[in-house]
Length: 316
Ligand code: FO1
Image 1: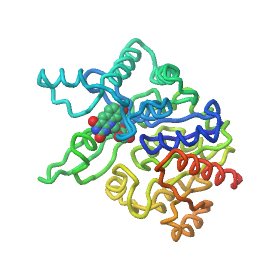
Image 2 (image 1 turned 90 degrees about the vertical axis):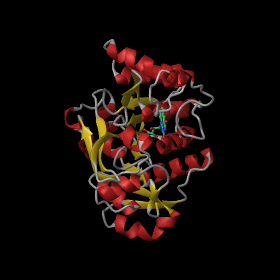
Image 3 (image 1 turned 90 degrees about the horizontal axis):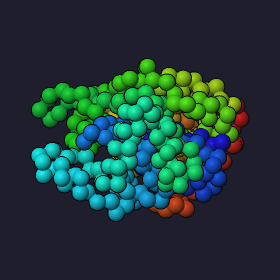
């Protein structure tokens, strides 16, 4: 089995390439759930839904999230009744998130619902949440008036457009979270573990904050290979630069690799960062330099091949 630790849009695009070079039945995706939140009475699990919809071929490709062609009748109805609906949840997506809320309220788990969602959409890769326990990514910020606030990740990113200066990131609930069923087993029994080109703080970092995960990555006999989400001094998408800067981490492929050095065997960096390779190699990590922008599915497949090749080239 190939295990992929995954955030949202970047991870989903990468996964779409990976399933063309490895049979999907042999892939286990471990999804970040720190972005999960309750809105309009339903449970949204953005990263897990993005990966599932993408592999199902129904994602809204332009936005990278939500379902292509979805309508917004429920949202319009909420707005007509005075709800400040800043989170754009489409009608079909709403059904997913209401079914998740219902399932969990009735005693089911996020992981059992994830399996049901994947099956319903014909996704053959296994998609696991990192944990069935609640973990919430909170961003400590100071706004332009100098006012400090503790925001849910979605409030920081979607509602306020990442405009606030970041003071810190807190993964509330992480210390008491247990890995979801199958997570540690998948890592221990993997042929290779890949870290998707996802945000090192609020995607991969959140997954690593679940007790036992980092240890499992260090202990697995499988090689662990990552792909840098940072090219030059900036993330391909998202707000990793602001979060990393807020945590005094260098915004570069070297800064990302440094955060993973206790378990990382190989790292794929972009051609633009070739000159940084020696600094990563000095950490005892093998480096592969590749074209890492995923404009097409062929690009994603080539990147997946490169990551698997980099992993296979190392020995534990
Ligand atoms: N991102 C936005 O920027 N605006 C939205 O209104 C929005 C709605 C949304 C609905 C469902 C879903 O699964 C994801 C959604 N996202 C939206 C994406 C999401 O907030 C983030 O991109 C991820 O959490 C980051 O990985």
